[in-house]
Length: 190
Ligand SMILES: Cc1cc2nc3c(=O)[nH]c(=O)nc-3n(C[C@H](O)[C@H](O)[C@H](O)COP(=O)(O)O)c2cc1C
Image (cartoon, rainbow, N blue to C red):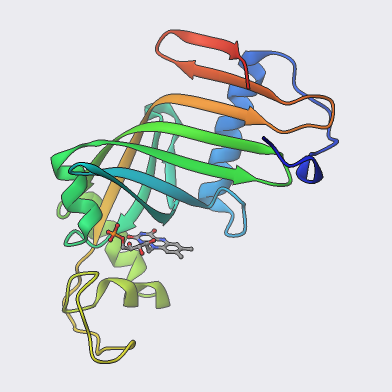
C-alpha cells in the first residue's frame, strides 16, 4: 500500500497530543516557507455529482481558528463549487517527514472586504499579481496560451476551517495513522 523507499528514519513522536502540536507547527511552516512540501496542497471539492480537485498554495494560517488561507479568482469553478457545497478535503504529503495529512475542511470564499483588499494591496506589488488580472474567468477558451492581462483584479481569499485531521506516517519501523477531530484524538489502523 505504501512505498517503502519513501520511509523516513527520524525519531518518532509517541504521544497523540505532541503529534497534533507538531502537525500544526508544520502547517505554520508550510504557510511561511516557500519550499515546504505542504506549501502546495491538493484541494478536493464537490462538483454537483462528481468530485473535483486541484493544487492550491497555502498562503497563511490562523492556528487558533484552525484555518488555512489560499488565494483564488472568485470567478473560478472552484469558487462556484464551494458556494454550492462548502465541504472539501485538503491533502498534503511531505516526503522528508513521511507524513500525509488529509484535512476535512469547511470552505468560504471572500471576494471583497478588508481582508481581501489588504492582501491584494500587498500582492499587487509582486509578479504573483498576474494570476488575478485576466479579463476572462479561469478555464475560458483562448487563442494563445499567454493572453493579455487586464487592469482590474479578480482576487479572492479562500478560508479552509479544519474540522478533522487524518494523519498518516510512513515509517520503516511501521506505519501509523491517527485522527484528530471533534471527538478527540485516537490511533486508527493504517
Ligand atoms: C503548484 C500550483 C499551485 C497552484 N496554486 C493555486 C492557488 O493557490 N489558487 C488557485 O486558485 N489556483 C492555483 N493553482 C491552479 C489550480 O490548480 C487550478 O488549475 C485553477 O485554480 C483552476 O481550478 P478550478 O477550475 O478548480 O477553479 C495552482 C496550480 C499549481 C500547479
